[in-house]
Image (cartoon, rainbow, N blue to C red):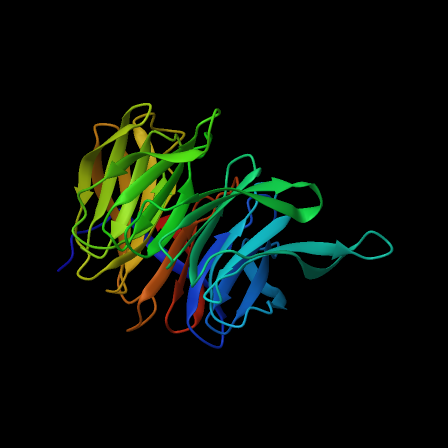
Amino acid sequence: MDEELPYSLHNIAELGHEDRAWHIAWNPTKPLLASCSADKSVKLFTYNHDGEGKLNFILATSIPTGHIKTVRAVAWSPSGQTLATASFDSNIGVWEQELDDDGNPGEWECASLLEGHETECKSVAYSSTGTLLASCSRDKTVWVWEVQPDSDFECMGVLMEHTQDVKCVAWHPTEEILASGSYDDTIKLYVDDPQDDWYCCTTLTGHESTVWSLSWSPNGKYLASASDDKTVRIWRRVSEHAFKCVLVLEGHERSVYSVSWGVGKSDRENEASLGWIASAGGDGVVRVWDLSVIPSAKLVARLPAAHGVHDINSVVWCPRNGYEDLLATSGDDGMVKVWRIQEV
């Protein structure tokens, strides 16, 4: 018998792909949810209230990306105007919505194709200012690209610090600090040296297997990492380039493939709250934790079999004001599901 938890997750939308749904990204400025799949497409879903309090999700468009293999990850720029895709075909696509002759939004077009990785791209992420894009690959490298006018990109650095496949990249919410996680069980943090190039300023060790996913706390003082070792680790920034593991979240019975750190519902009422962490993975369970500065974590919601018997590949909180109680998941069943967290 499970303990009584204060919150529960309610399904409000079920959206689909024709093959495994890998990753999802909420547009930070507009009511758009992007998802990508092994079917090589990106789907964009729009959402709005129907006037009776119900939130409706509708397929706005399906982008036939032209990627010749799986699209593994998607990321929005902070402006919400540009979408980046990372594919197993080793390329990064950058997408923008064309305007028609009357200035109305039209089709999504590939504005730039970034080549350079030697094999499968696993993750892509924009910095908080939108001026930098990071990508990572099975080729063991992390690339940092500078976003320039007219959809031009210049490679600012190729970082070869990991000894194995790099699974994820995540930018700090306000600073130009980049984190990456790898099959080599480590997390690397990178900064720019104004006199030289990007370099690895610290390595975080502690996970006993692959690091699949990374998410910074909203205040930027902590980093969460999800691993094949069935745990989520919380790292606190103790000095400019030093981080210390202060908490290990346990409970998942299989690999944890995704972690997302949102502001939570108690953020404005409770100054001690660091927000809410959602985690999901191979056991099909979504877990939501309330983090406080002590630091301690309290499990506030647990949803088993969110995608039936299938693995969950991604879990992401909505970042938009007024929608912080929304969570999206994507799974091996090809489904993208949207959940609202509510008090029991």
